[in-house]
Amino acid sequence: MTAALAAFGASAALAAPKEIAYVCHGEDICLLDPDNPSAVTNLTDNGTTSYDEDPTWSPDGKRIAFVAKFSSKGEENIYTMEPEAPEQTFNIATQITHFTNGVVPTGEIAWSPNGSKLAFVRGANNFGSNPLYVVNADGTSANATEIPTTGGGGTPSWSADSGKIAFWHNNQIYTVAGDLSGPATALPGATCTEPAWSPDGSKIACGREFTNIQIFGASGGSPLTTITNSSQFAFASWSPSGAQLAYHQQEGENTYFRIVNADGSGNHALPVVQDLNANGPAPSWSPDGTRLVFQGRYFGPGPSTNEVYIANADGSGSVTPLTPDQVYATSPAWKPNPVAHPGPQVITPSGGSTAPLPGPTVKPTLKWFTNRIFVSPGAQYVPMLSVGCGGPVCNAGGTGTTKASVAAGIRPRPALAATASAKPMSSKKPKQVVVGNIVKTKILGGQTKPVKMKLTTAGVKLLTQLGKLTIDVKLTIASPGQATVTTKKTIHVVLAKPKHSRHKHS
Image 1: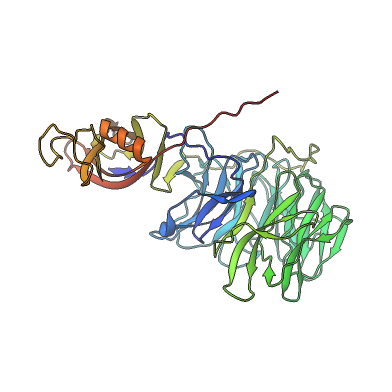
Image 2: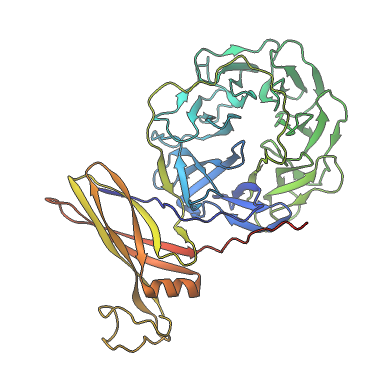
C-alpha cells in the first residue's frame, strides 16, 4: 500500500500578470510581473527538496515545463505546471519523463507549437552530441523516445506546423519528422550550430562559432542573410512576429545581445552595461515584441551575481535588473499571449509529420511539489492525498491537528482539551486542536483515489481568522489481513484570496 502525495482540486489561480518565469534562488521556479518586479510568486516553493531549472512556457501560455532534480533520488526529470488552471492549485505538477538511471543533466526543453510534444536534450556536457528525446507533453508517454541520429545533438527547435525538429551535431544542422517516423537528414548548406526555426516556419537561423549568424530558408541551400558575429554561441531568438532576430555578441570580456531584421537591416545593440555579461541562454521576447528579458552575470566590484534583466528591443533606455535582491536568478522565459499577439499567420509547411509518438501510453503521474494547499473562502473540505491500495481493499481515514489558540466561542474536542469543561478555550496558551477529519474512503485493490479532509468548526474559524493553517495529518490505511499503515504528513493550508471581477465601463 502506498500513499502518493498529490494535491487535487483546490482553485487558486495566480493573479495576472505574472508573466516572467525564471529560476529563483538557484533552486525554485518563480513568476514575476515585469512591470512590478517585487510581485514574485514562488511556483515550486520547496527549497532544496528539489533543484528546479529551465522553465519554458507552452505556446498557449498555460503551462510551464521545467526540469527538477530531487535531492533524495538524484535523477533529473521534466515536469509541467499550470499556474492559472481552474480547479487546480499550483502545487500540482505532471511528471513528463520517468528517468531512473542516475544524475544525468536534462534541459534545452522545446515545446512543439501545437503543444502536444516536448523535445529535449539529456546528457553530460557533450555539447551538440547528447542524446535527444521527444515525449508527450501531457505526461502520457510511458517512456521518452530518443530521436534517431548519428551521434546525438543539441538545441532542438520545432517547425511552425510541429512537423519537424531541427537540431545540430558536429557543426551541421539536421531535421527529423516530429513523430520520429524516419532518420534525421542534414539540412543542405547549413554547416552551423544552435538552430532557431522562425515562428512562420520559413527560416532557420544558426550560428558559426566566432564567425557569423546565418539565416537559411527552411529547405537550406545558400544563406539568405549573413551577419558577422564574433561570439562562440549564437543564443538566437526570433521575435514573436518573426520580423527580428536577437543574437549573442562578444567583444573582449563584454557579451551582450544585438537585434537584427530578418533581411539583415536595422542591426543594433541592446545597451551594454559595464561588467555585465549577457551569458545565455537565449533571450526571451515579450509577446508584443517590444522588450526582452535575459540572464546576466555581473562580475564587477562587489559580489558576483546572476540576475534577470529587461531591455527595450529598439535599444532605447537602459538595461534594468528585475531581480536585484536575488543573488542567483537565471533562465527567464516570458509568457506567450497568443490571444492578444497571435504572431505570424502564414505557416510554411515543413513536409514532416505531427502524428502521435510510437510506443505505449500511461496515465499521467501527478507530483505534489510544495506543501501548500489552497482552499476557497467558506470551503469545508481540503483536497489532500492520492492514496493507492495494494491490498484487496483499503479503508483510509485519520485526523488533522494544529497547535493554536482557539478563537473565543469555539469549544475543542473533549479528548484534546485540557479539561472537559464546556467553557471556551483560553486564547492565551496554544493547544493541540483537531481542525479536520479525513473523510473515510474505501479504495479497491490496484486503484487510486483522492482523499479529502473535512474541516471542523474550529478549523474553519481558525483558517478564516488566520488565513493559513499548519496541519499535522495522521492518515491510517487499513486492509483486511494486513497490518494497518500509518502515514504522517505536515501540510500548509492557505485561504485563497477571492477573485475580483473586472467590469468594463463605457
